[in-house]
Amino acid sequence: MFAVFKPARKVALAAVTAVATLALTACDPISVGGGGPSINTSKPVPVALLVPRGSASSGDQALAQSLENAARLAMGDLNGVKIDLRIYDTAGNAEVAAAAATQAVSEGARILLGPVYAEAANAAGIAAAKRNVNILAFSNNPAIAGGNVFILGNTFDNKATRLTSFAARQGKGNMLVVSGNNAAGQAGQQAISSAASRTGANVAGIVSYEQSQNGVISAISDIRNQASASGATSLMMTATTAGALPLLTQLLPEAGVKPEDIQYIGLTRWDIPAQTLALPGVQGGWFALPDPVKSQGFKSRYTAAYGSSPHPIGGLAYDGIAAIGALVGQGKSDALTGAALTQGSGFQGVNGIFRLRADGTNERGLAVATIQEQKVVVIDPAPTSFAGAGF
Image (cartoon, rainbow, N blue to C red):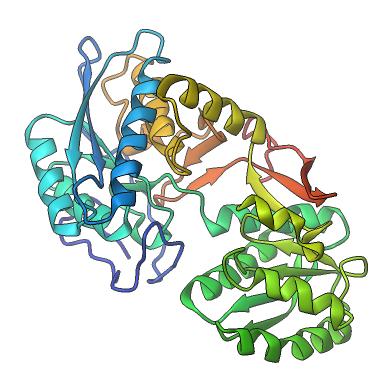
């Protein structure tokens, strides 16, 4: 279990990759209580933005700039709330991130926004906890959440909860789960099983495959046999478009597991990259995605302001500033404490509604979409508030 605001909080993160969705350690949720610094709402609130600028990856430079741009775009929408934004480079490195966090809080930051990568966010969280300062990290890895670290990235749990709930309501809740045997696949499978137990869906069986072409091919007969024996009404796949999804959706119909007979559902985005929409096997499949109207609105505004599209996770910086601004705007000195950050009504972000949970994870309002004639069609819109949002 994570300790609340204890510098010794450590998580086993050796296998974490960039913005990974891997539950690498198991821990019980904890309450963050009211921890966090007080603020002077009559003055600009010092906010530290930790970005991966300075790493050896050229992609990190673009990501860092996109996060900074999105944060500044959000600052312009705060209706009188003043933010003193201070940028700190982490080089995408845990040691540098810890030093940056220490410097930021020493220089007066009342809350930290970022870093991106799980190891860096964990290290920064330990450093900031010494000064009772909270962090809104851009990671989607629940293994680092807890204590003073809140994650903003969309998690497998959010997607699984949305999809299993929708499937159950549509009479497609008897699910055969198909997942890779790697860490991400197993984390996805666990999220689906957990979500099913809360939403009225049922896991009829689980088939895992090795992360190779031969591994996928070898699993097809097992998937077919279990789907038939279990009477599954849907096939829930954790595969990504860059991984096994194209092969699975090609081979399964050929083996008799046809999408017209059993509902295909994906835990990951099936519309990225756009070429995926042309695959015959994904037609009619379901997947979850952020509110497309709000997402497109943010992309258009960002592009108009900066001349290029935002990074796929750039909007998280906007969300962080928006949440901070909404809380500070209430004029309370405890606006950035854990109790305030986890208010039940949540916040309006560029991808839809979201709220932070006491265990450091988050809930995001997602839409359910399908693919028809190679186009994304929303079949169940994203909720606009958490009252009746289905979480």
